[in-house]
Length: 120
Image (cartoon, rainbow, N blue to C red; front, top):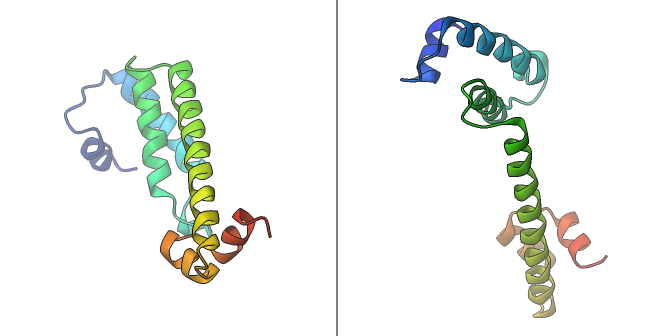
């Protein structure tokens, strides 16, 4: 990341020289973790930004490793609960004689996921 890109990303966030150096090292490690399209991988710019956000929050003392781990744990529980509700909705919709392909279209799921939700 170029210095001007880092400045743009940080906005009005003020860092000491040591914090900036620490953050730049973190960015280098994050970029190695999410190399993107140039290295034959799917670009994952959103995840890179989220990783940078976690790094800066910890570096500035706005959050902790444990706090971010708890946030992730809560998100995983919420995702599983939402998946359960969606599975129930898929089952009820299929029981109303709606075709699996239509359910897939309406939900954005692939047909295999719809069939899995239906226990097939």
